[in-house]
Length: 262
Image (tube, rainbow, N blue to C red; front, side):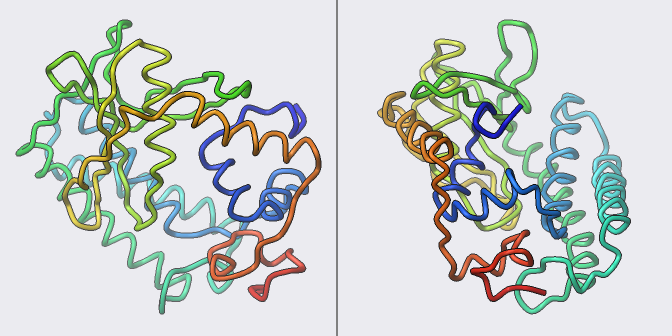
């Protein structure tokens, strides 16, 4: 399947909008990406949180932490096989790649345990789909703006009044309102359910964000962003946007516009 024919996603669209040249290097040139411990951290945390919720919150906290530990270790080891030089890994702030790997191992375990304790106290009501599946890591494929869009929703919660709430679990600081809006529109379109609010669980703080109002967001409004992005790709329009975000770019080492070429 060519890049022109692929389904789009929130991450694809936001990456294209931020720097279309990065999109080109990643998805057309297929440049080998530099690994980042934050990616392993986020995936392992999601895996552990999902396992906890799917167990009907019956696992012990140390069992959930072990799921994080095993997943994180597996992901890091796999990435190290691809790139053993941790100085070439992306890292945040003052930390080197190797330091960030170790730091996020401890941080992820702490955040996983905190999520279990928060969940036991808050007892979020996970929605059940018509197919009798819990609203956890729900995959979807919908047409928005004439473009096929796919994604995975971390959690869909039953609000108890006939509506549901979309929730995204975040281990980092970057939050996407467009992501919550897309997921809310997808839920309305696929299941015919009203979605008035959405939010993030912020693992860094061990709490929920303020609710985001998504009830007035229209399919046309969201679809236009996907249509614009899709049209840009098909035109071969890939302008570069070098700047602050270059330091977090996993293909900067192959970018002629970036100063981040380690």
